Length: 376
Ligand code: COA
Figure 1 (cartoon, rainbow, N blue to C red):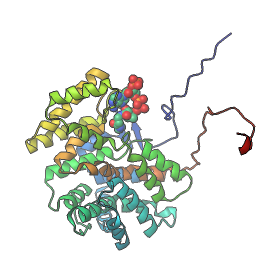
Figure 2: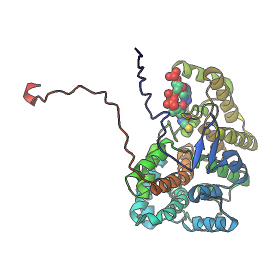
Figure 3: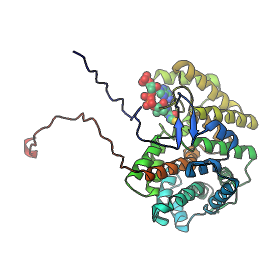
Figure 4: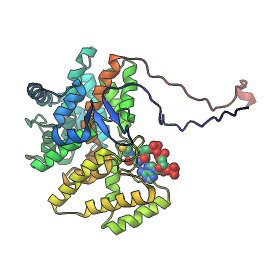
């Protein structure tokens, strides 16, 4: 008689193919990432973030004229309605900036609702243009006590972000680093936040609801929040030896080290190799190698002890630090970039929609008889 071995479901939809996409491939051979067929290495080296966002939203790389038109529309969409500014002003100064963006997205959905699905590309461009505006309007109002005009003329989203944050023309190396980081964060197939957006979309809900839900999923430290958690770890240490000692203790206590490991990549995260080069370059430019050398030692320890590799979030943390970005804005930057990928997935889901509604293995009590309250 043959015995059937029933494997316990590992949970987390691990290894489950949950649908089709023509937007990205992740880790097909243990590593490797492509957006619409283009390797992430080529995009990070040759493209600007606006070209990548256009590629994700419209399916092809833009011609020179299409790129100019796209950039112009992004610049025009940066302003915020007064009612949204009032909402941002009324949020607490201590709010987490991810909560601010989640609220900002939802509020914009009330002020400029999606009338029909024909508006979807316009809403995608509006959110791409206005997320940095919302975030930095709120930050500067509460941190510096001023009402900035978020509608800058900077041609790039990276430049717009850095100018609103620092109130000056961004350093060109910093702007380039920011641009590359936005490219790396833009899209990643059926990750948790994108899947959230697709689930909401599959109910035929509106664009803003799908993105608001996605921001909520991205906030957690197992997903987008890992870059902030990685920074909190790295900045504790004065040198690599202290970092090694502490990380060894954390591993003994079976604690997770944020910025390591991945659900899909098995060999390496190709985005990490790119941002690591930038983290090193920025730390050398700043003449401060402490954070980079601490990061590098933690990387070595994790490979040696756990055979785990850095994901994008780990070296992004020190790179952002050298761009003068406060740690609490790290995950919101992810939103400013990933909106391109979320939007592409919302549009793709709508094009061939079926309600996403899986089933569960029931592990609860056997059927039982009702007992009145007095007899329990
Ligand atoms: N630090 C220490 N150990 C880790 C680890 C990490 N960052 N990531 C995975 N592991 C270990 C787990 O403890 C587990 O070990 P065990 O089998 O001895 O229990 C094993 O590797 C598998 O981990 P698991 O959490 O089950 O894998 P997953 O596929 O469910 O999770 C992540 C993937 C990304 C959630 C996970 O690697 C993680 O939590 N990383 C840290 C958060 C992070 O950087 N997130 C950003 C992802 S881009």
